[in-house]
Length: 380
Ligand code: KG4
Ligand code: ZN
Image 1 (cartoon, protein in one colour):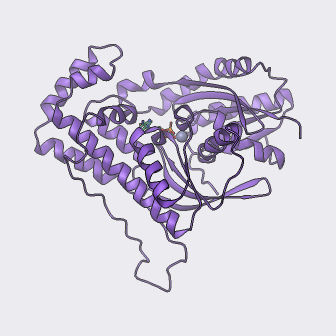
Image 2 (cartoon, protein in one colour):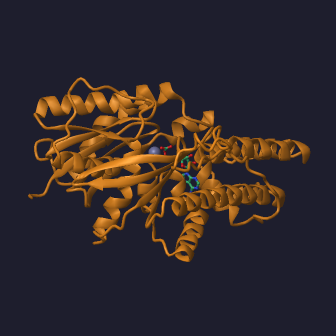
Image 3 (spheres, helix red, strand yellow):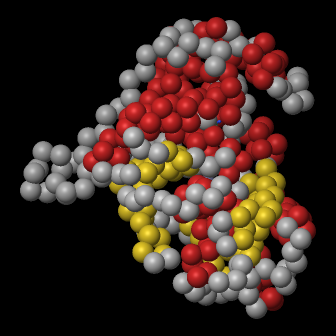
């Protein structure tokens, strides 16, 4: 089959992104316009501001992705766009633009689930390295600011399908990183800074106990499904950090740090380090270690239960250095290969959307022009 060039568009949260990917296996261009600076003062994503920023950025971002790829609107074969899950107003910007392009250029339009995109970021990069062999069953941990999900990923002919075997009951892991960073005045988004600060603290200094998830039908053998579920919960540890801060009278030092960092235009790691005492560094290192430990333990529980051959770990939190190292070690000990996207493709991007669209292009699974954003879209 001839090479297929798909233009991907992603606008589900706080990154406006566009990319061109060839036949699901070669990243040709990848442009991400981050809105971090816009949301930073609020310590989290403000949906209205996100939509407005997407409107501003979408045309230049798409044009840059095309020109970086040496392509034009006319020369791509299809347009792919994130349908959900995400912020409805933010998704609508990408979708409306993609629909207009598809209509005006008379090119097929492909609607992609954002979570499927995160999974295909791994596949895209493995194929790009020449690794076309994949041993099933594949278990994918999608761990980001909005999601902590475990999926069994299956492929029949070209089409992929997914079975959810675990999810968070409350906060996503990335959300816990972001909220703890906000509480400790460590910037936004919190994951990358906690990742870097943690190497300077003692991960064993503070003990956190994570909530154990009990399933409602756990004692009723008749009702128990054959399929075990492995769920996560991260709102408790966030409260644990808050209680630690209160009982150790850390509020004052946090306020001092907040004020000091506010004076610096773009604070760097050294600025954060200069404004963090040992107690704070130990606290973030312990918090991170607890989350990483839990993600790995539960993913391995599911991997054993489903006799999985290959693990994928993807989504923004998959950029975390300790998570990657520990997963690689754990995978090696289990004799199970673990694949991650590169750091730039771990967080939100449109290359993953264009890659996930390729199997749908082959099976002509095109979207009608009247499809709409699905904020709570489920991956199946
Ligand atoms: O996949 P993503 O870009 O957006 C969503 O789909 O949510 O993930 C963003 C999340 C944020 O919560 C951010 O703090 C977290 O990923 N994150 C990290 C790291 N880099 C990004 N968390 C831990 N360590 C990192 N290095
Ligand atoms: Zn994401």
